[in-house]
Structures are given as C-alpha cells and as structure tokens.
Length: 334
Image (cartoon, rainbow, N blue to C red):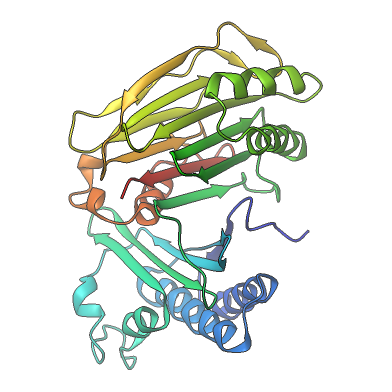
C-alpha cells in the first residue's frame, strides 16, 4: 500500500549499503508523486543516497524518514536522517574533502548545496539528526517553523496518530490525535477527527472537541488535543481529552499543557479549555503516548536553538516507546 506522506511519515531502515539504493528509489518516487520536475527529482536522489550512505558507512545503522511538505504555493519533500552513532563535527564534515571513511568527502556539503533548507544536530551521547528539505520552484514554507514525525508501529502501514496545523491571519490552529490502539481502525478514528478539525476553521478548541466527540461515537475513539494560538496577543488556548502530552518551552519557565481524562467518541468526563502564554521564539511540542513523556531537552545542549524538524527528530529518536504508533509535532513561533 502506498503511504500518504501528507498524512504520515515514511521510515526507511538503513542497516548496510544494500539499503541505499532502495532509499534512493523510494525518495525519488515520493518526489515524482509530489510533482517534482526531473531536475529536482534528481536532487532528491542524490540527497537520499548521501544520507543513507552516511548512515550505513559511519553510524552502522539508522533511519531515513520522508515527509511531504504541502503549502498553497507548492510542495516539498523533507528527508530526515536519524542515527545513534558516535556523533560528528557537523561543521568540519560540511567541508569538501573531509572524510573519515576514505570517500571524496563531499557528502554533507553536497546535501547542503542541493537543499532548499538544511539543519542538523549531533553529539557523542545523542547521535545525529540531519534534515534536508527540497521545495518545488515557487513553493514557500509556512511562516511558523513546523517539524513533525508520525510513524506507525512496526508491522503496520497506516498510522493511528495524525497531526495538523492551520495558519491564518490571527495565528495558528493545531491538532494532534491518537486513535485508540493502532492499525486501520485507529487511523480511521484520527482521520475523522482531522476532517472535523479542517471543517471548523477559527472555532474555539472546545467547540471542535465537542463536535468530534459527537461525530466519532461509531469509531474506535481517540485521544485528541486542539490548540489555538493568537499570535498578536501571544495567548494559547488548549483543549485536550486523553493521553496527549504538550509543552511550551522558551524564555519563560516551561509550561505543560493539560489534557483531561477520557476518550473522544466514547467517554468524556469534562471538556475544559486552559489558557497559556506563548511568546515569539518559543517552542510548542505535542506528542502522543507512543513517546515517553519523561524527557528534558536540557539533556541536549543547544538543541532548542535548532529547527523544529531537528527537535522533532531528536525527540522521536530518543523517546519513542516502540510499542505503539508515535507522533511528535513541534512548532516554533517566528
């Protein structure tokens, strides 16, 4: 079954050099599906080859994760490399001619030159996250920096978690849904929650959850969190039911986002909205219970200064449970 990369991410396991060709083919196929021209499909192929080759040669193993980037102005493809290897000096490795494996040493430098945007984080204790994005000509990224990883449990092709972000004149409207269990039933429940979210632009988060609860009674049910950010006032209204974790990090003390007990579509004890402050430059992080909630970004010096995609990649890599679908959404205010 072909995976919808606008809905979920595709994780390609890299264990040796034999996996590099498969990674290249799947990345190029995704680019073609998104409408890339021949030149940009070729660029995607080179980037996928370099990232997957580095995982096999230097880290021993890792993941190459693909995600579609959609915007009214056009499309794009994100390629994220994750490994738990010994880390690297990114700046040194970006210099052409530097190599630790006897290769020409043009890998990271080439990736940077061929990408629309490029970012990374690496340390000896945490491993490495590299994110390269290629946009179709004329396409633009959202005003807010958005990063996400959304991957099903091993053995499933459809993810029961789903996320969505809508930008408008006032600010941001965010959704994270975790369908009960995993597989097709969980994916259908989260898809229904997302459809209602998109059909109610600008509404209060509590109204959206009430509509989801009423409409999803025949579904498996889901844990859902909806948040509304007023960019001018820097206020964040958040309404959640079920086991969705949320946090705001930045200049002020970190703030946890409250989600009430229950399951949307089945049993809801109370739908309640909580108000928070989210200043420009601060970071919002939401994730499903496919990731442990016992984590601290302080364990990764400097990570909070990286792009939202790199932050999302590191949180997913280090804290996924492996026993459920997993989704993490990171949004940094400009």
